Structure formats: C-alpha cells, structure tokens
Length: 249
Image (cartoon, helix red, strand yellow):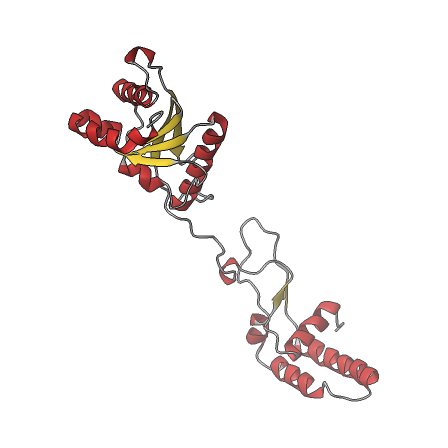
C-alpha cells in the first residue's frame, strides 16, 4: 500500500505525542470532512521509510524509539485505529472555547440640556417628557442671574441626550459608556456655546457624571425644576445655590 504525505504527517505527529482529533460528524454548512484511517501495513512501511530518512540525515537511528511506539499504536484493533483518524476539515465546534465577550447590562435614561442666558442647565427627565412650566422656570432663573426683568426672558434652547443611542447589544451600553457619552455631549455644547458654566439640576443628573468630569467648566449643583414646581418653597434653596453666579454677584 502506498504511503501518502498525509499518512506520513499523521505518523510524525503520533511519534511526537501530538494529539490528533477528528470531528464525529460534519458541521452544518461546512464542506464534507475527509477522514483518513491509517492501516497497519501502511504504518509499518512509513515507519521504515522515516527511519531510513532520519538515519541518512542524522547519521544515527535516534527515531527508532518513537517509531516503535507508532507501531504499537498501529497494532491496536481496527475500531481504535479509526477513532484516532485525522481530518483535513475544521474541528468540531464543541472543541473550540467560546470567545463571546460578556456584555454589561444596558442603562436607560434621558436628560435635557437648556441653553439659557450665559449658562447651560442640565436636568434628567425620567419619562423623557418636558413640561412647559419647567422651561419657563429655567428662563426665569436665567433672567434673574443676568439681572434682567421678566419681560426680557427668552425661551431657552433645549437639546436632549438619550441613552442608549441604539439597541446593538454588541456594543457596551453600560453605565461607564453612558458617562463617557454624556461627558462628550456636554463638552461639545460647552465649547460651541461659550457659556460661563454648567448648572446641574437634580440628584439624578448629578449621579450621571463622574467625579472630575468637565473640569474646564464651572459646575454648580442644585435642585431640579420638578422639585421646585411640586414644592415652591425649595426655590429659596435653589437661589441660594446659584446666586453667586449673578452678574456682579
């Protein structure tokens, strides 16, 4: 029986104690797997050929011990020899460890950014909706900081930040990614508006930013507009928090 290059490769792998695996069934959608069983006569012929080649190359018969081991394997029953056959196709998927990265749980929230007067005002909107009285309250506070009367109030320009921006689970949609995205959003608006500072309204919005974020902007923290609307007495505390920003204050 002819000794093929594939037979010889199998023999050398066995001689070096390198495990040889074969899939038990063809993978769905893959090309048919070629399985090669090496009969005992072929192994013996290949062993003698390998021994002759190695002896002529190295001047000794050092591989004999390994080849003896190959012949011992070849003397096993036929069903065992077929179990050690090799494949030229892909290995079984079960032998390949999973490399699917674990993804963090996505967080969901929405914030609105007001541009009113010389400041940017940030507040979280739990339901994504913004009431007209909230916009009017921000406009009144901005007018008060600029020492302008009620007639000089201008409607704030609003921008919304929603997270996550998409539903592709292959990307990180967790809290850290959301914080980075929010900081980039705010920094862009700060750079474009040339504002004097950022006023963060409400504890929920404060928690969305990490410590040391937006270090180039003056940041003031106070209560949210919803809190002030539900409890008007809280406006005194808010004014106490922001009055130092007033012109000439």
